[in-house]
Image (tube, rainbow, N blue to C red; front, side, top):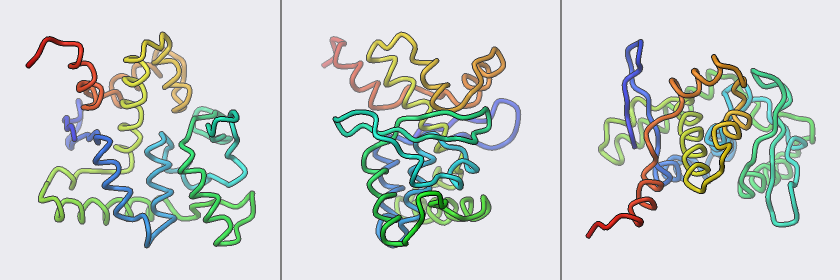
Length: 206
């Protein structure tokens, strides 16, 4: 976990490692399938309002190799598509069948207040279980922040020349000077640990 203060207000911003993301999701995996999906959607870059409006029909197969994308028809900056994991799509498919949801029915049909309550309950339990007070500051927006930073640096490390443009497009940031400033100032965080670890393999360190 990496923590930084907000530049112009009180409070802290958090970026979770991949292992910490899995700890968060595993906490609610079996008992609360909707919570698990909601948190996973946020870790795929969706805003809280967008999480609440995801429907089963919004998932689309991208190719024959198991890659999927999610359509966000009513995002803050307009419609967009974003890549999602096959496991997330499978969980939504299973819930649709188990709960007998229609294809055009929201998967996580709760208020944004409920989403905040879910993340609050999870963070308090993780803080206690792991004896780590940093978890107390975790909010839904930190999950979107985590996704933005992980996605950008993962693409950039692989040499993708339009890493920032892809991340902004998938995350729904406006392709303007102010949109880039918002992305860089408020979302893009420290280099993720897994990227640092891979980069260190190229250094003469013993």
